[in-house]
Image 1 (cartoon, rainbow, N blue to C red):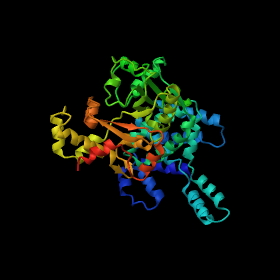
Image 2: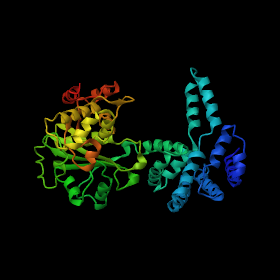
Image 3: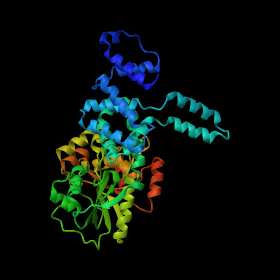
Image 4: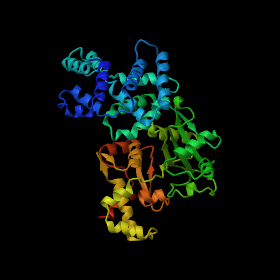
Length: 450
């Protein structure tokens, strides 16, 4: 059965009375089960519009047309999509996800031929044929869209829009995974440009920093100007297809020692640090900007490139560390720490330095960061990122983020992750072996719990 017949049968099924559908016998074959599921999809597009949309998508990937013509046809879909309501856009996602799959019979046959060839001189050639058979027409569809000048922007935005729908509709997963795979190729760090963003950058770019800042909310233009002052640096990765918009950016403070609080770093009245004497670079905010690039990693490469850039500009720099939030701490504490401890802290937010509750809370936080793993990885999302890059848990700081967000996430606690450039590989090896790299001060804190 060809795809056109399949669509036609779907349309006919949708036009049948609901009672007739309910009385139909239970589907037996895989194809029948899929048809039954499609009959329940409750599409927003009419049968005719659904068929026309499918034909438009097929026309984009027509092997008989050039890349230029394929891009022109993709433009027609992009124009339609821009005017379509969300329900109709969802129908397009479903068409792209379910109507452009690899041929299962060809995949099965190629797999059998490959297995039969294992251990023979023809194994390599059979493997290539098998890999080709598993490549879906969906990938070609995405490639044709990417050839259009605005195609990559369109696809990134479309994937961002479909993310919430994934939770309730598993049929979209094939499209989502395919897009993530293609984006990891198109946005490989080798194609990205590292740029410094300063107060002299275009206002439109600075506005994007304000909008995308994900760690410490920007309070206004004066706040942003302070973050781009002479003793600060901000760098972003840029891609030619998304001109004028960083994919990710990092904010850095150049100081004389490891920072223990975000407040002085964001103090607009503080005097600038003498750059000739700065010895420490503090990464205090890293923000991804494109929800559609979820799963595509830039942070590791960004930090490495920025460290190299800073070392060249400021040879006196010796210490590279973060001042990071602990976003999962409070929720974890409420599951594992004694309820009496948390109640005591909430009654006395400004606990004395020697208060036993304060010592205990720091101990539980040290345990969370230094011991807790899930499937071999740190449970905290920010910890996973920095420790995966080769950093170690260095210091915990009480009251380091007194903002409402900081209190909500971690009772105001923040952590330094130290990037010891001589031990990055050693720390990665430790983490791979199931041991979190930590400083002695962190170990001492959680040992006080026992």
